[in-house]
Image 1 (spheres, rainbow, N blue to C red):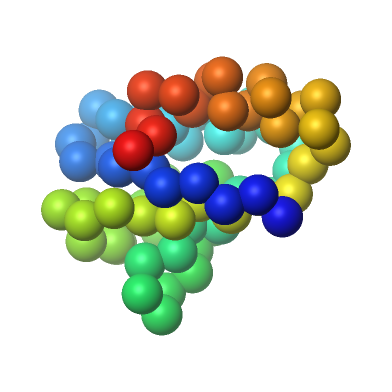
Image 2 (cartoon, one colour; image 1 turned 90 degrees about the vertical axis):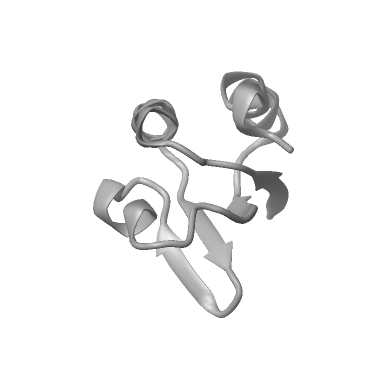
Length: 77
């Protein structure tokens, strides 16, 4: 399981982030405090407090991990 910190502080960033993670077959979860939501759920993301950083958790192969990190690099903190 890989964990990275992301910031999604606008509706446009949420849309782009959601489209990006939906391209991959692995599961993505966003954590904020005690809340975990599916990062492939636009409504779920919008229910979080977007003024703070979020932890993104995903499991993937090493090859896929590098591709995912490259795809989401603009959201990484």
